[in-house]
Every structure is written in structure tokens, then in C-alpha cells.
Length: 437
Image (tube, rainbow, N blue to C red; front, side, top):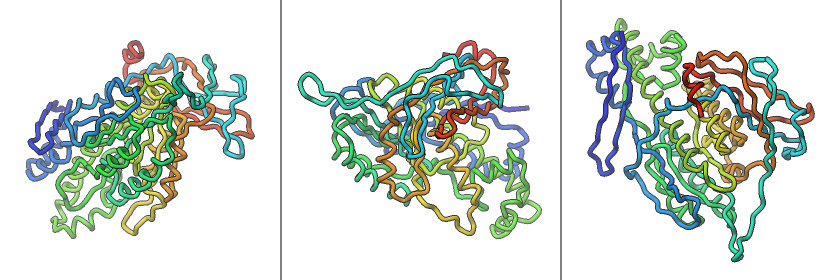
């Protein structure tokens, strides 16, 4: 039996936050654990009360000039990530092809490509080539804006040190923006917003306002990360696989209560982490929608340490699909730079955090910048879209409405390197396919 509860909480702070927890499903068996440990109920809700703010770019952002900046302002709540729709009648695939020197190639034809869906060859029904345009002068001699770049700082997941390093690099990178560039700043928490502008001083000043904004939650011993919670709850790994039993003993928890306590804490962290990830994906989706109608090139640069997306392949696949349809490129900058695995850290956890950064960049024709401390160089590389890109499309046959992930493979001339989305997700229900855009 499952209990369905809906909460809307208004928090009275200097900057009011409206927090919505929609369709929260918690099994009665799970709540039974809280009866014995009431303090965990407080931890559960404090961990899930995440910011409902959303980056909001104005409808007239296409106009050049300085737009207003805001911090922690009340904004339109983020659209629910669950409203994504997948059109299984047509799967778009953006392909960037590079030669041995890393230069993009723009002289290929439809016959040079093949698409495989779960190993089965598909018929490419749509094909086009996109070439980046050069700067243009208006009739009055002024430079016409032709590239709109949104710098999305993932303040929810970024640690202070990594964020400070990224801010410093961004402030130097701003000097390299062209006269035809318009830049905006957004944070995944919605706490800092600067709409499109060519004012470099303002860009630097607003970037300094960005601070870490984790969703919070009370400190609990033993500490269970989102990754560990996923391993325990979803992957059914034993709680001792992460050394948690030993750590729980140090926390003074009686040995007989350790398995139950660790399992309950894992449930709490899993729910909190999942909501945090959904909000981050929703923020990215909203930016895609906000800039989709702008003229010229549209680029999102996600500055993040990465985050895991367990059981959320459908959501991030749909985000990629929407970005492709809007012709928005998502490039990603791993703000951790060259990171060192500490003795108590999990190497696999660090790698898992970065997989979403790779998936978003590969899937939308962007670039992933990682394992490099020169973040200023990274910003410069990511702000410039590839000179050429190919848009392929196919209609999958006999697909089932099961929400499962379909792995894609795109091939071309052997001497070239191809970058394309890793796959797509089937709809969860048949009506999603029938009503998809």
C-alpha cells in the first residue's frame, strides 16, 4: 500500500522560498521505521525541502543591452521534470564529426552515416547540415547579436572551493566574449540570475554573487551520500559494502539497530538526492525553453561537479531530446578540474558524478571539459559551437511503451571521430507517444 501526500510549504526568510513537494510517495513500511525513530522524520523533510526557484529569462531576452540581475528573487516555480514528453515517432540525433586534428568536418552526406538502435540498423529519414554563421554588421554598422550563451552554475552541487575557482576563471573568460555575443548567468537553485547582456563588468559582478546553495538537511551520523543510498536501496548492495556498519558503531548506534538505522537514513538521502537531481534537470530544461526562439546560435554551459541520475535516464534523455529539437547545445565544464581520490572517498562515486556531464554534451553536440584545472581555457572552448553539425532523424519501429533506455550507435567514415547522443528512452505510457510534440 502506498500513501500519496502533497505538500506546499512557504518558508519565511529574508528571501522567501516557495517549496513544493508534489506527488510524494512513501510506503507505509518506510514510515514504520520512523515511528521508532521520530527524529528521522525531521531529517526526512528538512532534506527534501529544496528550493523551488527557477532561472527565469525574459521573453524579450533577444534584445541586446543590459538586463536586470537578481539574487534569491521570487520566481516562477520550476516546471515539473515529469512533464517531459518523448516523441517515439521521430528520434533526432545531432552528430559532430571531427578529423584527426580535432577539426569539424562538414562535407559528408546521409549515405556516410548509419544509426543502430539496440544493434538494429535504422533508416535515416531526415538529414541536414548546420554551419556556424560569421559575425554580421547591421545597416547602421552595429554588430548584430548572433550567439546567446547561458552560463548555468550548479550551485546546488558545487563545493565552495570548486565554485570559487570556476568564478575566477569565468571573470577572466568574459574578456574574450565577442561584440556579437550575449551572455546570461543562471544558477540551478534560482538564487542568482542575470539576463542577457554584453556588459562584461556586470557579468563579472553578478558572478561574484554565486554561492553554494545545497538543498540542506540535518547532519546525520553515519553520513550516507546519494550515491551510497542508491547502492543500498536501488542496487540492493549490503550496507557493509560502504563501511557503514563500522562508521555507525563510531556514531554510538547499538549494533542491533545499525542495519535498520542505516537503511532508513539511506531512504531519506535517496529521496533528497533524487529531488535535487530532478530540480537541476528541470532548471536546464527551463533554460532550453527560454532561449529556444532566440536568433543565431544558442549555447548552455553547465558548470558543475556532476551528479548521479539513478533511475532518471528517462528524464535526462527527454532533456536531450528537447534541446535537440530547439537546436540548443549543452556543453559541460567539470568544475572539479583534476581531482584526487581521498582515502575515504569512492573512485566509482567520483566517476559516476561525471557521467551526466558527458551524456548531456555528447547528446546535444556540445563539448565536455574535464580533468583540467585551466577552467578559463575550458570556458573559451565551450562558448564556441562547432563549425559544422549534422542533424539525423529516424523513426523506430515496434517500440514498446516501457520507459526503457535504447542505446544508440552512430557510425561514419572510419578515419573520423563521431560524437552523438548515447541513446533515448521509450515512453512510459502509450499516450505519451500519441500526444508528444
